[in-house]
Image (cartoon, rainbow, N blue to C red; front, side, top):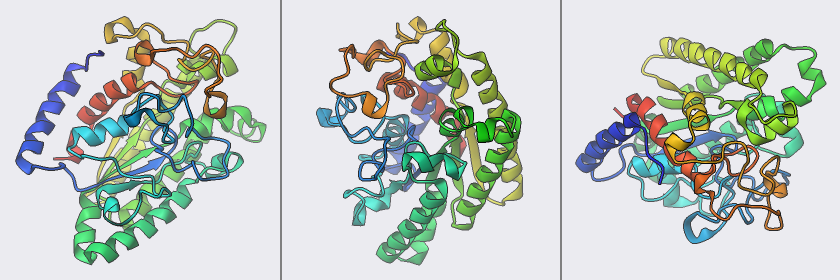
Length: 351
């Protein structure tokens, strides 16, 4: 069993104190936007080439069934929901579970292969952030109808909203698209993404959201698929991609601070997912892992979505020692560690 960092453990103790006093969830609802890092199944019923609602995805999840999560088990946001006292997870908004009272604990609008740049989602049939925001407005109307305008206003303002985006913009668009990478430098492209990020937060604020967390880019150059697609013949992390991620994350932190200063009453946190994941990759044995380069699914290189299936040869029998489940996504064991670390960074969102 992997060990949680000291900061994450301390925060869990603090959250437990909140939980024992409130005898329920620390916050009224969790709202999720973004990409496959937080998608719990919205792509399942879309005409999309990016899905994960089939084995071996979900083999270690509840009832050992695939749900549309890009993981062998739980996502970091699933663990976060548990840590915050929720007895169930906010449903994918496009799923059958997203009805009536189930929506009162929140909803998940995320869609694998979406990004800050709306055009990123188009080739993959994913739901753009602009459309996710439209679905959120529909969600607000439904909740308001159920519990009334004032109670709904309080729910939206006290709910934690989580946004994860950016990886697809680079790995599935910018690096592969000469119409972008010839015209824009990574720095210039990041500025374009920052404008989209600012507009998204502005829209959420106008809709009553006051507690928002945004997840940074991971060390993109260390993802197994990225090493194969963008690296040299060795298995080292692609330094160029990691440098772009660090540059983007610096802009994200600066933009987040500007937005906080601009909007009264807004609690906005930029979660650093880069360093905790890089620490696990750099020091795997200290964290209970033995495989950092090869993913569990198939050959452990590029297999993701339909390429990671029940016929994939070479899939590991036990993913707990692996950092990556497929070519782009962490295992449940890593997600558990990341959830603890991110919760520590976001304590201001629940205080």
